[in-house]
Image (cartoon, rainbow, N blue to C red; front, side, top):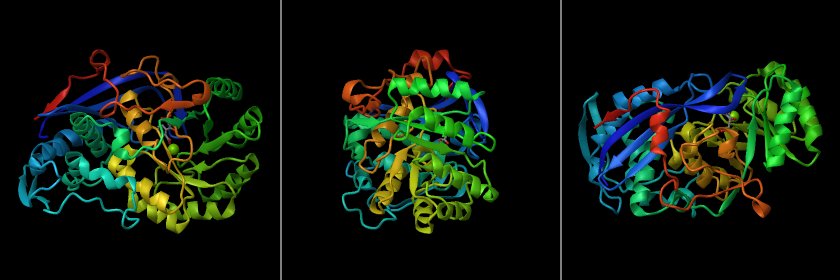
Length: 422
Ligand code: OSB
Ligand code: MG
């Protein structure tokens, strides 16, 4: 297929309750949707960047700007446009409007570099069947960083390409299950009582794992209280979003008493060394989120002993195709992974649920039901199953993301006119 147009839609979707973390509090989700239109079909991608550059240096306004000024024009002018269905393309040096150097596109077959060595049936092995989506990362490599912006574009192109092929994301990714286990990420609450009420509600709804947001001053007491509420065997984990320093290692190690599944990203994104020290000082497995930018940083963190488990968020890694490489590299090394979340609407959630159906995702993800976030979702809502599927979400199996964007809601919740790039 040939890409004809990219539209950016900015909207605000109200959250059912404020979401507070160590870095801030949100009452609405500011959403950036990318709509990719090709001569053969259309697709949607959701950018995971937040309203402010607090979780990461990326934020919605910056992502929209870099897509409009650099990324979308480069994609629309990319020679990969004319790629053959078998994924072959010829080598060309094209002039890029914004860069004197131009963009070199080599003439090798579309290949997936995998830091884990030759793929032995790894999920990333099937990427050759989506040549347009697989070309996006290389076409956009001339821009440093901006992974969330790039990931949203790749997701939209992938959805369009798969819809054209009438294949689902689950099939493309190599899903091995039809239902995925769901956990829920619980924000910092105004009081302990409110926290316990909120957690009780999620337990009643069937969530299979609870994750508590922690920060200095909101850690041992709420974690102890929730452990008491849940009982010894329930899956419980914590996420600090970089709020601690090396001086807190003894305090964090004392969380061992609560039998946690893992402790997520206590220290700064760049600080692998302190995570190594914590891993040596405590029994609880350490899990990195913010620090894992791609397959190379994942492998490095694993080899250094900075992470026992990896939180895979495709948007943070520049897209689903890189996320597949991280999954494969972790699987080769027997490192469990789980699918993180960024308060996505149904658009991003659908793709996350498909990813979470891969074999290496052995822990419940932050892939909660739509109702945990929104009274009304942008797509048909994701609803937890019942009976044997209590606490699970069904993996969509229709083409592309498998969900339909409710265009009237995209219009109704818009905060600006759509930006159309051709
Ligand atoms: O650190 O996992 C995180 C939300 C926004 C930014 C960062 C994080 C989160 C969550 C919520 O924990 C996960 C979700 O339910 O989508
Ligand atoms: Mg996290």
